[in-house]
Every structure is written in C-alpha cells, then in structure tokens.
Length: 143
Length: 143
Image (cartoon, rainbow over all chains, first blue to last red; front, side, top):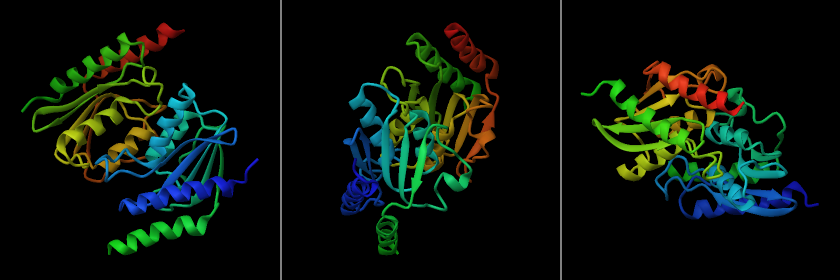
C-alpha cells in the first residue's frame, strides 16, 4: 500500500506539466490496485475546449483502460477540488475514492452543496500547500 | 429566424439515433446564427464513457468548429434537461442560450440549485411531450 501523498505527488507533477504549457495548473491520476491507470493535466487552452479538465480526461482514459465505464475500486488524486462539471462526471463514474489536494471554495463542488456517488469516499488536504500555491502562482503571474 | 421548435426537432432526431443504438435517448444541436454547428446524441454505452453525454460532445464539436472555447452567440437545443456534469460544462462555455425539451426533476441541474453562466438565457418545455416520452419509452422497455 502506498500513502495518498505518493500518488498526489504524481498528480502534482501533472499540474507542473500544465503550468509549463501556460494552462491553469491542475493535475490528476487515477489508481487501481496501487497501479496508475490514467494521468492527465488541464488542457483547456491547448485543446480549445472547456471540457478538457484533468479529471474529465482521466475518467475517459481510465474507462478505456478498464474496458468498462464504472470506476469501482479506483481512486482519483487531484490537486484542486473538482468543479461542478467534474464532480458530476465523477458521480456518474461511481469512483470509489477521491483524494483532493487543495480546496476550491469558489468553483469547487463542495460549497455548491453537491455530492459525489453515495459510495465515494472523499479525502481532502493532501499536499494542500503545494497544490494551492501552484494555482496562486499561476494567477498572480497573469496579473 | 427559425422557431425553437425547428431546432428542437433536430435534437429529437438525434435522440432517435441514440435510441436505435440502445442508448438513453437524448440528443442535442448547437446553433450559431441560424446554422447548426454541432449535433450529437448520448453515446455513453457505445464509447464506454460516462462523460459521453450529448451535450459534452456538442460543446467540444462547436468549439472546434468556432476555433474558440467560448460559445457566445450560440444556442444549445437539448431534448432533456442537462445533468450536473453537462450544466457545469455549459457554464464554463458561457453559451448564450439553452433550450430544453423535457425537465429532469431527479437528475437535472435545476432542482440541484445550480445555475449556468449569468449571461445564459434558459428556455424549457419545447416539444416537451415527445422529448419526455422517448426517455420513458426507453426505460419502460428495459424493465
């Protein structure tokens, strides 16, 4: 068993790849039985597509890998709390666990009163400082 | 100027294509300046992907067509009220208008207390009976 920090570091490396592309730096990985089956970072600018959030791409990739659309026995590690769109996709996927780096009070699903699938465990605050700092750095650099 | 019913009929034809593929029959089109720039139907089973809702595909297609990720001056016609995921995507897209066939009291975004972009006009109840009946027909046939 790996600790949540181990996979969140991989998600953070994905966020760093997004930053290098001048994308809002958010990354994620999906893990099944201690094996990474999908990793991705935000590509909304590169793909000119508002739906190209890290989580959306990872959900599609993981389902392709598994050959089934439900992500049971899978854990998503994401550096920033998912938005409404991504939380809806995660709910449809019935994913077992979602581990969140930093909260997103404004755009995140939690403060909108939304929930994921009833079976989905949610953990927050893993590598919170790094995950929060990289997003703040990006937006400060844009001012 | 075409009436909303004209484009909703096209969205309904997309729903019929989904039904033929044994998919939950929901269809949509996106219109810009009275021209259809994207049309799609639910393909979650065919693509083994919970994110493959009609609206998600149409948002991506329309952005590709326009060469920009924002769908200003565009109208989405969709046979069933968008879910949480699709409403989040529509909010990010800043689409100008969303025309809904039938409401989805359980899974739709409206009863979840969610809203789209502040600039987005929402119209409901266009071809409501047909759009509702095709979904009911599908689920009854599954019992």
